[in-house]
Amino acid sequence: MTSDNYCVIMGGGIGSRFWPFSRVNKPKQFLDFFGTERSLLQQTFDRFNKIIPVENIYIVTNELYADLIKEQLPELPETQILFEPQRRNTAPCIAFASYRIKAINPNANIVVAPSDHLILRENEFLITIKTGLEFVKENKALLTLGIKPNRPETGYGYIQVESEENTIFKKVKTFTEKPNTELAKVFYESGEFFWNSGIFLWNVQQIVQAFNDHLPEVSSIFASGEHTFNTSEERTFINNNFSACPNISIDYGVMEKASNVYVLCTDVGWSDLGTWSALRDISPKDEHGNASLKCKTIYYNSNNNITALSNPNKLAVIQDLEGYIIAESENVLLICKKDDEQKIRQYVIDAQLNFGDEYV
Image (cartoon, rainbow, N blue to C red; front, side, top):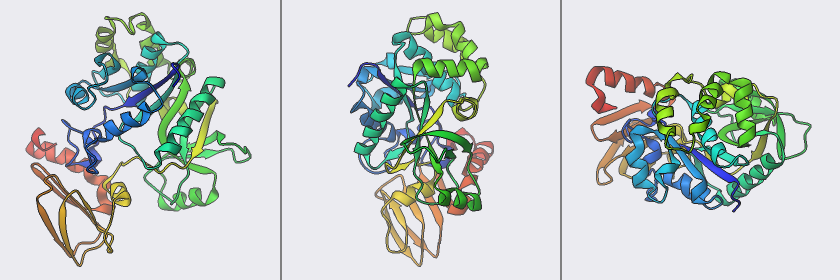
């Protein structure tokens, strides 16, 4: 392991698309979906800790999750948990972590990753990350991990690469947000497009410069308190100034504007586990395509469903359903067509408006 390599895990999301399992007080990154006795956050930490020392791993999260982080990762010092007083999307989150790490090590090479992704081929993934960290150490580049698509997926963003470059590191041509079905088929068949994993690698000097160039409204805030980072004054500065940051993603704010963006193309069995359908796709299924998540089920004349119960001793009996999500957790039962799962966020809003915070 090299002391110049760092990892930032983004762990402050709500995960509302996994409602009712994922709740505001315990979102999906803190849940164990697969019965491994390790949450998605813990699995992410375990993965990166194999190539990056624990003292170089940071988690950026909302203050609401302080106790959950400490409970699930007791080996991580509290000084390496960066608390956002408000949610402001990924650009301010990454800027916060970058300025903290820069104050500690101005030569740092950083991998930034969400806390709730699944990696099936971990050894290949870790080799890829080490390769990427070496690349950003030697090159003035912003690097993102591009996943080779295995289907015309409409739920992911896509990155088009310069096809003439015969290397695993390819220059970015365009970014495209989640396409419709026809466009996704074109992307998949062209061979020029990769899924945008949301995993980034860069040298700390390059990302700070990119904020200066493309998001000065963010960099000016953090630069004004640069002397406070990694001191006892940092928390006060963040609490007083973080809310002034715009709510903007690193993709929109920096990656789509910068000219030195590259993609490291790979295939590591990646899933962002963004939806119930994505979870069903990677779960064991019966001969009719039904997946049961840590629960007992009996299906009659039913196909292509996913059933999830918070109590593994409960039994669900499902008849004459095709393509449904059946999810029960605590005080909420959700029965929803898989094709309509993009509406779950609205269901959460409606539940809160009609019945109160205890249901979200």
